[in-house]
Amino acid sequence: MLATSRAEIAARQARATELMLAQGLDALLLTNEANVHYFSGYRPFMPWASTTRPFFCLAPAGREALLLVHDVWSGGARADSPLRDIRTFSEIDGLPAPLLSETFRAQGLAQGRVGVELGAEQRLGLSYQDFETLQAALPGVAWVDASSLIWELRLIKSAAEIARLRQACHATEAAFAAVFPELRPGMTQRELELRFRAAIPAAGADFGFIAPTFGSASYTAICRDTPLQPGALIWVDLGAVYGGYWSDFSRAATIGPAGDAQRALWQQIHQVTQAGVALVRPGRPIAEIVAACQREAQQLDLEMNFAAGRIGHGIGLMLTEPPHIAAFNPEPLRPGMVFTLEPGIVTPDGMYVVEQNLVVTATGYELLTPGRWQIWEG
Image 1 (cartoon, rainbow, N blue to C red):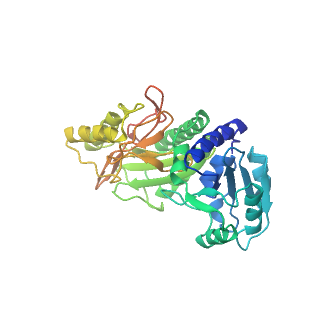
Image 2: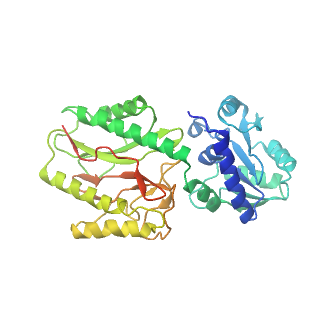
Image 3: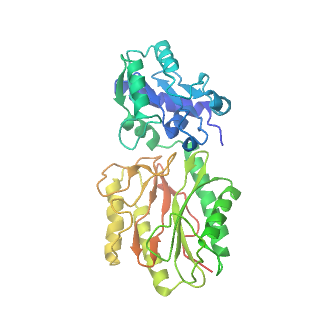
């Protein structure tokens, strides 16, 4: 785990204050893992393993945020977060309402307008009943949806965030390069998965996810002891996590030579993807990127039917986050946006998607996945 610098956190707080003042908010209360990490630098340990011990980051406008965690997490929080005010509680049978109430009153927020994670693509890190308990404990607080504010902050990545995303992509590329050339007849789906699970840490990141297909149009939720078939398209959607930041892109391989039709369609899908990549620059509406991919696909007489509704998504502290790379999104690209581009085709013999990860720069883009995209042939 990498520490987030005090300067990085301070810059986020300053920008958050600007947005809070513009929206008439006195503070933000963050409870979701990714948002707590973003505002405090503390990456909660295994939050998915237990919902018994929530965590809270209170960010008053114009002041340094403070962190509230259970006693069991206090050592990690103090080691990892640059915040100076870290408070702890011992309750495991419900919300630490007394500590939260006391903290709000000490910060002059008992009658404030406080933004919370209530809206688009946000989730509270506590139960609805606990949120009701919090509302009852602080009857003077006006709770306001802050999802648009949070996404506005997280949408534009800093140089430090982009560096972590770049490392996550590097580890993923290294894993593909390590595993795909070693495919052999008789290797099983499960062996393939285990090799990827080992290859990403060997490249210096944490394993994130694997979602493969094996010569069919269906994602494999569980890799089994089923032998890989020579000639079948083995498509792997793979992600690594570096310092909390995700990569997400897909590559393919065959055991033995690929068929001419497989190579041709893979090349065409890469061509469609590159038509969108080539247009990435600040000010370009996202819908125009999608339209460019669609035009190229039409010229090649291809019907894109992968991930209906969009052909990419933002990426950062979450595997998928705004913006949607979709025809319905007119939002202009801005420097610091990081997203995937994944137009593709699902056929009876597998997925044809050459996904790329990009960051918008001041003058164009940086391809975070510049390595091999061709089918690996054993």
